[in-house]
Image 1 (cartoon, helix red, strand yellow):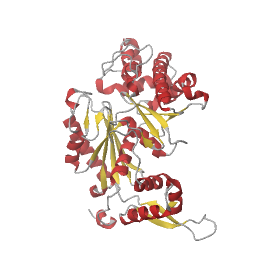
Image 2 (cartoon, rainbow, N blue to C red):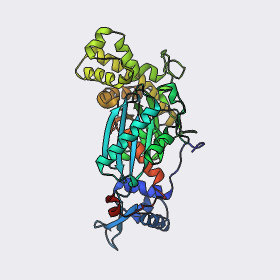
Image 3 (spheres, helix red, strand yellow):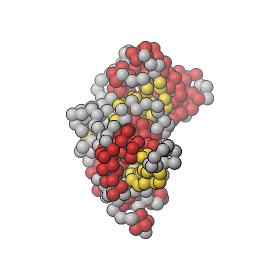
Image 4 (spheres, rainbow, N blue to C red):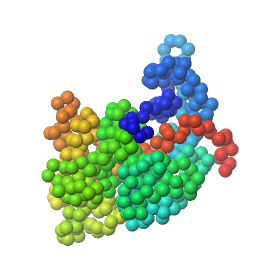
Amino acid sequence: MAGHGLTRATTAVRVLDLLRANGTLSRVELAERVELTPATITNAVRRLIDAGLVREVGRDPQQGRGQPRRLLELDAGAWYSVGIQIDRTTTTIVVVDFAGTRIASAGLRGTGAVGPESTVLALAEHVGSLLRRAGVPRERVLGVGLVTHGPQDRERGVLLTAQPGPEWMEFPLTASLSDLLGLPVLLENDADAAAFGEFWAGALPTDTFGLVYMGSGIGGGVVVDGEVYRGRASNAVEIGHVALNGGEAPCVCGNRGCAQAEAGPQAVVAQVLADSSLAERFGVEGRPDGTLADFDRIARAWRSGDREATGLLERSARWIGQAAVALVNLFDLDTVVLAGPAFVIAGPLYREHITAELERSALSRVLHRPQVHVSSNVDIAAATGGALHVLRTLSVGARVPRSRAEADLN
């Protein structure tokens, strides 16, 4: 919501979140974890059971004395959702069930030089095909989370930038895709979605952390007590546009020395293209829609021990380390996650150098040693987070429309 950095979840959403994260819990355990009265939890659980979202699955055999507690779990097949992450160079689509388990996925080419109308048409076709192959009935799909770079107007479902081309500015992305699919479509920022997806992957020992997202550009996200920090208009934590000390490169935002302009994949690829012998050795082609493929070629050269590739990536990682220091200092963090397709191969190198920058310059280092992790789902974290955002946003109040048997006949 505009005007609020953090939006607290309703009781029903918190119950669903806890069951999605833990598998099974009793009503007593739910009441303890959300710090509400047993009566409040009982009422919330009753409504969720009546809606077909939660079910009882027996009693807790590990409980001590007294009447064994009834265990609850999500009905994984109650609903499904789709997450789509689009970038100039890559597109990822995932389908998850109501428990948040990924049941299907596909990787496609990015938007490249294709306009938004053609992109939306292609996305609708691929989503329909993926749902059919996964055997997911359309009437069981709650909606679609469409994940893009920012800045965005999430309420109107439009981009507020002329990237990757002027025709994308304020094009009705969510409305157009919703009309083609016959499903609700929610717009989400790629870094926020990746942060949310990482949190619910359950691999981190904390519910408060920062995230650096690197696709063809660089973005940032922050999770505080399990909730994504959104700022006034859901365009917060744009660390790709943090001005770096010593930076001079012009940026698409109109400023100079931004982290994205100095250290993003496009900047690294441009440095290679400036040396024709280096570009030939790495196989870098320089196509606008092939930035991440070129970046991966450089990363593979680093992994093979190439000194020039190592130097280029280390320079990039140190620059991004500066941006990570700003992120950690502003939000008082001690944990940073790296996510996005650019980290699939080069993640370990970036983790090493970003950690070094934080240990050298982060204010929190005197209290806690900074921790940097590569995402457990580094390439699909954003798409997964988009799908989970749909489950959290649209499921409460939704009632499963018909029996499972009836749905399976269609």
